[in-house]
Image (cartoon, rainbow, N blue to C red; front, side, top):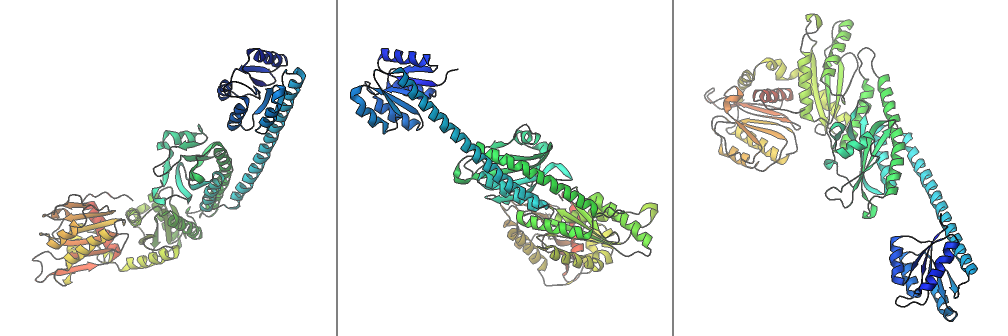
Length: 602
């Protein structure tokens, strides 16, 4: 193997051959060029350790060649060869970066010594750079480990997720970061766990289902690809960097880093630093997941399998804080059993109730209780409607007879959600207690309406109506429609049955919904429908409601309200029954939903 590659440049064929012979005999690989232009072309194609250039050549002279070489590579070693009369020019060239010069006729020993000196200097420079890079790399790795070890100081998953995102952003100088992490109950899904910087919560996917992920993300999850530079998203100037968190073959999380500082793309050093940090972060995440599993196991009641209420409070506060940061909903459903005569009956009933409630829950939900009369279910990413759907499922199961044909224990159920009913656990518990107390007084139970068909329920309520100002039903209906316009993001139901004729004022209110995108299901029951094109209104025949009463039913994340007017001719004067009895309004809303075959997602 040649000791070095040397480019000899001279316009004279004889001198090129002379230099090539000397260099080859000394063990160098020699390449020659007849002009400065040819030399530059060769330098563009391949590297050389040393360039030997004649100072005086036609066309591009040696001085100009040196200047062009220095512009291209400041560290390129150059020796000029010149006659005795051009020594001053050679010395001038050295000011522009020439390392040494040789006089013609060239002395073989002097030339070889000069070349060896340059090569030795080059080797020392490269060794210094290598050692410097190694030291910098060592310091960088040491600093990275010191920062990463701070992750092990917390076992709280939410706090850990934030620290992981922050650390990855610092390592890569990313201005935005998002982390999706697995939960101990479900490793096939990643849940939005932490974010930092230039990201918008509403733009981020709350869950990544690995079975339906893109081929690129599936490759990252499977370990086929270490990291992935995804094409820039709309509004971004550079690609995003996806970094997996993996430990012991288990895929624990995925981070997306974006908007690197200065607008530069992510480079190999960013990827390497992110992967090293993610490897340590994955160990911390495993530790936190194990801690939570052990904590939950230790805080379960051995007879019922329920978590303690103290543990429930701690998890619920964390979940509400997370929902506040990420703009999500979270709900709580509480079940209370009336005291039974015997302790044995109480324990048996508690076990049965906890089992029935657990059948209705998802893997991400948490059920806790005192094992006697109080049961609380925490429902992440669930709003008021979703909680009401679960409530009704639980009610249906609890009303079934127990083993041996014994009647089900009397129970009360209430739900409340963040942020609709409160922005702290204390506020939500206050609402729950009030609603549980209200269950005792609700007309739904005192009149036995929960066991009647919809038409009979409406007729029973209309029978309790009293005289009110003329036009009130229409005013209430218009107000309810205007509320949909004011709060389109609220999810709920609005059922309006105005009677045989549709008042002109109600037509105007419906017209204001044109072009509106709303999460409220608006249903109009009338035989004289208005023009509903480009409106979020479903129009059905009035008879679909199972009776001839006119009504307004509003149930959702805001206040609950129902109005039932007596059908024409049933009373001498117009009469109306109206109420904000939430259990009753909820019952009416879901009874109408079933009667009208409207699909509800939890």
